[in-house]
Image (cartoon, rainbow, N blue to C red; front, side, top):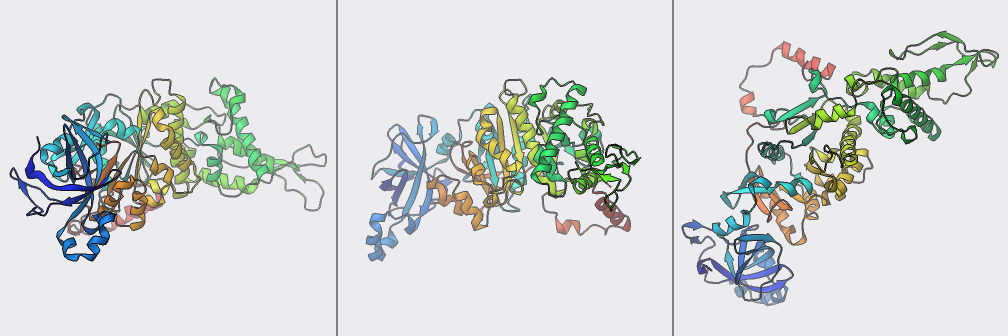
Length: 590
């Protein structure tokens, strides 16, 4: 039944799903009171209703004032200022319709000119935002236009169709992510899987009871983050070491790594055909033994017969100690250099330096995943992945804050590739993504997903964005610089949560990612409150302005309360001593 109190105007022109509405002159106030509730007319982002018999069409206000005047009337109003001043216009974008008590996105019928337009009441909002099954949704906050209404997301579409959270520094991104993770964790699914790639260690203190945190600098071995070097693709492994290689040197190294991996098949009882092994295969091998053999070959000198080696002292692969040979004669006589050497000594010295660097222990000394000199490992990748994805707690946080910045892109990309390849190739098993879907959360995504960059991280995330839905792998990207993100990845995110954003370049990037008719709503972003955002896309029935809940435990990225911290006593010299020790050891717990 139509409530005539809510009528505010009528349709004057229709252009696709964009409607131009002329407000009635007899509206006494832009804040009418209906059934004791105050409503505001003509707010950008607010809803209006167009009754059509048994159905109601709903739309979002995108323009008000002179910019909303239909093209055909602009010349008339330009010459008649008084008439223009007393006539008010709105532009409306149709987004869905209600038949009976059910609301659906999309339009099956269109209004006609002179059809009446109504305010949307609280009862209407209940219909728009209601209807999601409790089992299929999570509640993350309140609808800004009516704080009595809970803001819900369709969990199936939120995860499987990917999501991006964007916003300037201080807009509330970390809080929003924490609220989303808490809402999923509280659902207490028996086997939910969420993997958070956390480059700055922001989330280690959040939702402690529902998450397991792996850290580079963790003292407890069962919570220590190890990433075995032998699981890295060949190009990413070689990239870690300083120096340049010629094409022939690179292929020589590739062949030697393949040989080592084939040798370890028998040692580790891996049932793989040797012909299937490549330098990229995640098969264990000893990089120390490989280094020693290559280094030894490069250093060899020979006596007059060019067969007998001039060995002085045998080195030690475990200690990364080179063998000693009698130096070659500079005059052309014996001892002779190895004329088959590949000129790799400088590169091999770089490998030794990296292997001894304590910052890279998580990679080259990966605990029980570290091969002995024969290539034998105590634990394989199945136990590593089971620890990350099979824990009884729904959320696993991989804290990468201790990883050197120069290899952050390679390591984060390798992590993602290991996980995705496992779920892709295991799609027909109970642990595959189809049987047990996974949500991957990428904090500070712009750091390793830069537009135009051909890194392993960028390639892997692009693959997940394009194909992950088919294999049960969803993405949640968080960034403060969407303009630096690869457009392919952003365009594949079915749900967009945009928090306050002041940078015009970033806003224009977001504008290109939303449907054309709603692009004017992006102009609202600078005026949003902290912790408030616009949600559009697959996970919501209708684009919504939402005030997110405040999480009970703030992430580490939260700003310190200066006035509170400065009331404390000044730290003693012992505290500065601990600080310097932490810096020197690259360990937060020193």
